[in-house]
Length: 251
Ligand SMILES: *[C@@H]1O[C@H](CO)[C@@H](O)[C@H](O)[C@H]1NC(C)=O
Image (cartoon, rainbow, N blue to C red; front, side):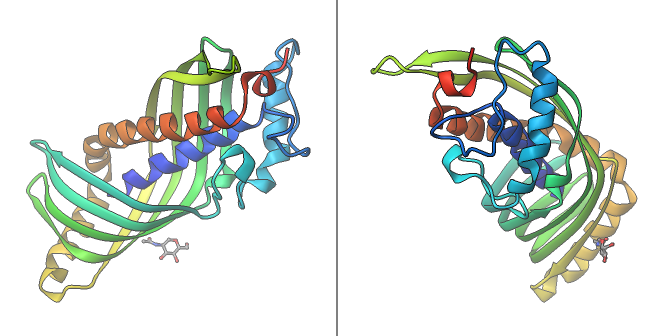
């Protein structure tokens, strides 16, 4: 369950990153502009990220970048029926702390290819959960408050974009496809269960997850990646729709 949270973090990072080479009316003055013709375009973006970073906590409304310290996801539902994982989970008021301290390890930006490799040293996550299912042989069942610590999370995101034109002839960017690879270095999770009859089950599940981190993460990763990709497309495209191409990527 903890991993579903990580993907959101990744998405926000990408948003920040997508947002920073934007300028003009839609974009606040404090956000630096990186011109396409700049021979050090990528360095320009990396520098811009550092300028923008302190503003990410509260978000940048005009650019559709959400507040990200903490990052709040009101509701997330995960339903899967796999051999290793059968789950029906509702997560409410999911909060992720620590995302704005992301480190950009690698970056490549052009229209045809977008590649970013991020590391997040520490994340602290809370969420209300309501879950039913089974992880390998361990039942997952209960309602309560989830808490988790995640260290050295890495995200390798690759994608492509295209331009679309609206009725007025204004060009906008749109994400064409995206692939996210996500890896968590270490994790520690806890369930504070509210319904008494499932307290023991939840305790067993938490212990199992904490003692079998590698295997659990391997099972959950494809789901996390799929959800991340959906988030990136949805929120990335919201940013792209908010800012015309000419402002996003000036010549
Ligand atoms: C997460 O880290 C904090 C601060 O180090 C600690 O107080 C808390 O108990 C940790 N939570 C879990 C679930 O390990």
